[in-house]
Length: 600
Image (tube, rainbow, N blue to C red):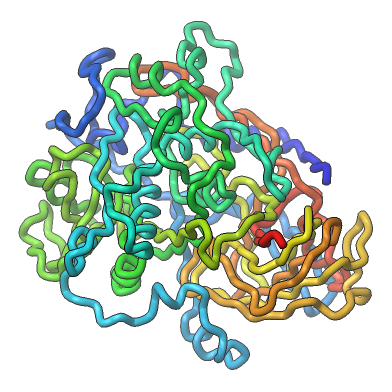
């Protein structure tokens, strides 16, 4: 199906541009995600990182940033309901680092219609008898954590954290693997974050991409000669969900997929210019990314996630003022002010309830610490690991994420991934998360859905969807070969669904839901997946757009590029009409609803 494109309006472009904090005449003072405020000379330390080198800074922290944990309405109502069965919704734009919102747990557990529905992530939140201390590096003699790596001068902490979490989940659920057997490619993940993906897929995402361009044809933009500006693009979990849930990786770190983590700007960019393997190569399939806010109230949930998956990713403030004892202990605090957005991603691999609060700078509210793996080599902290206070104000206001991964020939290994929305986040800034944003509709129980066309003889076995609120419940209905036209689907003409099922999830994030009964598909069959929310969660979507950001520069003031965001509407997404009689085709957006099949 040919996709239609909606060019973002000039007004919105102006608003986005005005919101940006970058100025191409002023380079970034430091990159906290890489080295705590360390500003390198242009060509010092030109060596491959092997874990034996580490650089520490004695400087002061940057000024407190103002947190942007809010939603801003950017448009009028997106519908004008004339039926009592349709709720009014507004389009909102959300800074990409906003935590998953806590849903209504009481209503979730008391809903009689869902009393026998087992949440898809129940194995994660199963109420295990948790010990006061747990360490995935040595859990009853088994290790579920790979060794610390060093991101060098790159901005790629987010890739090290995410792939570390994936490695831990694989080790946790595959006893035949040793922690030295697996090493996944940060390069492949980072590269396709800002490169067009080419390759076979069963959806409509081939025309959804972002890329780095030299929009103003600036002279001396030597990084473009090597096509390696991706190493200077920071990121968050939403990037990883967009890429990995689309089965763009993960792949093993070998050959052209190996990232050369180096010190010195010249070598860093020049030695990482070779194109990695194809975008849709994947040794494993990411099927779930469970996210919750790591608040003090959710501490038990975070522990349960670590216990089930081996590790979770988390955001921290890596400014030097919050570290103590050679990067061994971290506690950020802001004297009653709202915590700024995290500037570094790390991996939590365990906990110790009795770790003394006195070990940290400042005064945490109590004892207890998370055991964390960093991506700064092995010299810092304790061999690359450190303690993070339970009461760290940055982490407590941010998300943690656990990954669920399927391996080839396992029961939940699917052959085909039908999808239409390529990217969750609109990116204009390579480092400051506050400037990048996500589109969503305000919470409602309005139905929405996706229409896909089967590419062969297949069995539809699961669907997946994205939520930015916890405690969500849905009715799913799947219709085979429904009547539809260019306007949409007349609900009254729908025949009996081939599948009806109630689904739920405790955590936010991306989840796969296995169908109770598979649906046999023939080549050319159209199948419509309708989602009927029960929990009034916000509905995230990819908005069709084609625009170029202001220029981004690295800390040496080298142009890394303007970010060209290009997202097309597939025409496969549907939303309830104002009168409740139609599922109207959406020509300006796509929803994050996927369908998984196995070949027959």
